[in-house]
Length: 577
Image (cartoon, rainbow, N blue to C red; front, side):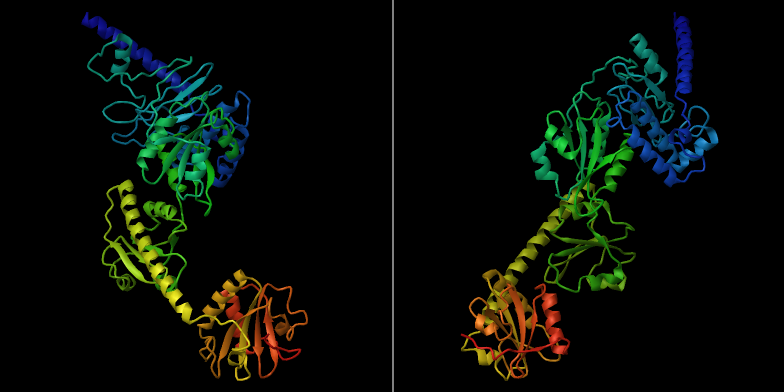
């Protein structure tokens, strides 16, 4: 009896091995050069250009021809080989990207190889799996082609099963205690597979998309599908990527049947096969959707997601730090000092989370003994140094240890939240002081009683800010006050009025048209706000009606002091009502 079993087992072994050889022969790689229509000496640029052109032409969502999907898969397989220098070299040598004329023996302990399964037919899609991670294939009316590669450890192959698995499935028990077969189905008919809803893949609608995704600084991996499309393999790969990038990436799914308005707005119209996009910040400050068009492999998808994480941190040179942070800024700034040659992933993620709340910078440091590092007060790396918006420096943390991505982002977020609160307190104190100071140092309104003090003949130059509305007055007063406190020449000027100084005043143009008629016949009625530089003793003036910014006003006054402005004679002596 035992001998009979062994004979049966041997006969089946021979049969199955022969069958697999036939599979491999059928799945032999089609010449990728012919598929993409490029020469064997084509450059990577030429290959990429050909791939993009063909993938657009045969994309199943754009090309409704029945053979388009199979052609699309063929194009992707060809590009996968030719875009990888190692695979291309092996193909050129052996006619197979796996490095041998037949099966690839793999490497013990190495999980870098992949098994590609491609299914054709309506509603089907192509995807890839790691050795031992087979996926359900097929579908009604589908045609299938397989390419296999051996790999993994312990003598198992990248089919995901050994011969014991096959015999167990055929006979209902194991010949030698092998693993269970695992439910592989070779049927070409319709197949059903129970899908567990992933906790990391969130179902999205239009409201959530606009409220939580658009311009929020976080990269999202978005999975678009229709209930009728074949999603086999997609959710497991996306889940794997979501788990490996937890904290740095959020993942959502969009059902284009129930959320038709959202899909239509985003330009994804009820896809025949699932589509994957990243809400990316790679191109700039504004988020945009970028589609993933490579094989559905966790490694490749993760690389795609990492590439589309925010890039709001500015890389600066260590010797430029003092120059970068020597002035006050609108927002507080944080600087990461690390030994990394490129901006670390965690810092890129944080730069997105705090975009338009903090200015992010990072720099590469080789040694904490560097004088520039010592000057910052940093004694261990990695370190974060912060500058409040008033220019004050604070070493936030040194010797940062990273346990894992998620917890590190969480801990550093708390650190940055505290720094942000500190900046708000400092800004509030500064505003209180400014309000107190402004009560003492306001630009006076020009009146009959103070005219001689501010714009009398003893004053070399009187700068008058004229306005016609309360908003214009507020802006002018703020700018003129700021400029009046700066030293624009060898003298220090103030608004109080003293000998050998420039004075500053405001004028209500709507009420003092007769005063302004001394400079212009119409009283500058067409201007809402402007500056008049008046030389009382000489009876001359110059007008500035350009863009009212501190820089432009300061430039105008500087030009007045340097004699670079053309003055005109007044029509008559200006008089205040």
